[in-house]
Length: 251
Image (cartoon, rainbow, N blue to C red):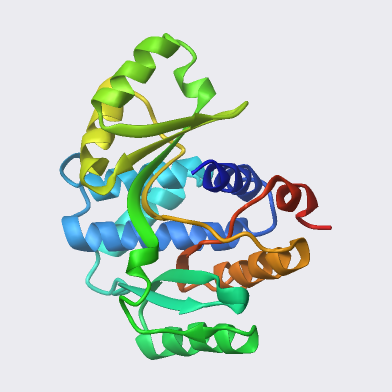
């Protein structure tokens, strides 16, 4: 999972400062909308909304925007988004799962199919690629948020909460749990008073595929085309993120 962690952490830092902030905000606002419509507007009794609010704070969304989103989602005229996943193959046999939140299924199907078709890929049947990925809880914590906690004690608490793997770099700690332990870890972090930068159930590839540099860059460009769409919430693939690829991103 180290490659996933490195790539995801770069995106966390990049997302806070690049020109795509508006799109990131759109995705978080839809997450808030879905959480409110499924569990109500009170974060105290709605764990999904608490996580959505934490994710919004993690991308530096202003508090007023968050409160307006909750109020809007509580109204009778709120948009009704559905969560739909699409599966398919990009070029070079790379598997993709695209998670969306949409108020128009036909539009979203057309967008996803078009991106696959125009980039040497193909939309597949629902469930056809589930075997390629595991669903894992992924919690990203800024080291600054836990600087007062003894590292050994923190590690023991995280293991107690269900951590299967803990990875760190200079700024971030990424904690992975089994899908079934997502709620346990969320509760443990709340108990410890630790606010996450993000907390999500993500799809982690069971095995990855290494490609030559130029081919790998094309896969990341395809992933970015999906991510640029407002309907798309998350993009997962099984490309191996090598050190060479990391060094050549954007070149």
